[in-house]
Length: 270
Ligand SMILES: Nc1ncnc2c1ncn2[C@@H]1O[C@H](COP(=O)(O)OP(=O)(O)OP(=O)(O)O)[C@@H](O)[C@H]1O
Ligand SMILES: [Mg+2]
Image 1 (cartoon, protein in one colour):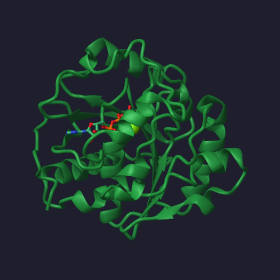
Image 2 (tube, rainbow, N blue to C red):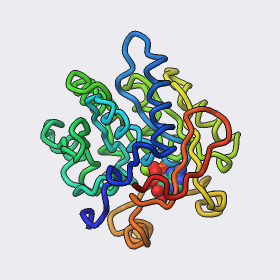
Image 3 (cartoon, rainbow, N blue to C red):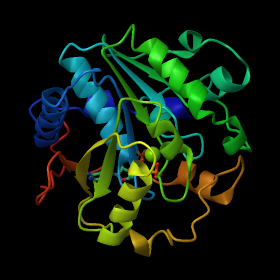
């Protein structure tokens, strides 16, 4: 199943506009590095489907290609995506490290990129809220900062789920991915408010653009959306059955700075 997906690494064109944007984003992260160092970074968004997982994966690939030892952790136990993007089996991963008391180093997977390792979300859990432990994940992330230059954490959206707000306090900085031209301003402001309410380590916003789709609030009734996906749920099986693998979008565009972001249809492909 997961192995039917083509790893996103295979679609990463080093000369593509999106790769250029990712290098710009990485440069901006490094430019604003302060003491203590910005090594662990959480990616979240206001609500679903804004491109957190895609941007996390592309940013991690970019860092790895630049020669940085990079670890990417799927901290979204509800709608995990990184195992698909990297064509890995979902198990074993973060869930096992959290619930079975096994060391995170035993669930770290190698990828085709020498400097990039991934921790998948692990087994489907019917109670992600109970399994998710921000302090424990924070401790794992801090431990891995010794071995890696960057630890990126993909996470759920911050408005429907409290996990990213809690985890944001355990990492060096949080990036808010915003679906450009789609996420209403007041929703973004609310997300920013949640992320900055306890400890302000929101380090920036990534504008992500999805070409040719209707505003996503036609797809998700995000105010009332039940974010938790349980094993066997219709939404989860629909998602697994749906058309092209989600690691193979037709177009990607991302911008690390405010402003109109370009659409780059099929430019990711070599
Ligand atoms: N810039 C883009 N251009 C085209 N498609 C994109 C872009 N960014 C993301 N996508 C596509 O949009 C969909 C949602 O992206 P992704 O899974 O990364 O979002 P997410 O915020 O992680 O979603 P979730 O809230 O479910 O975790 C995917 O099918 C992905 O391939
Ligand atoms: Mg995701």
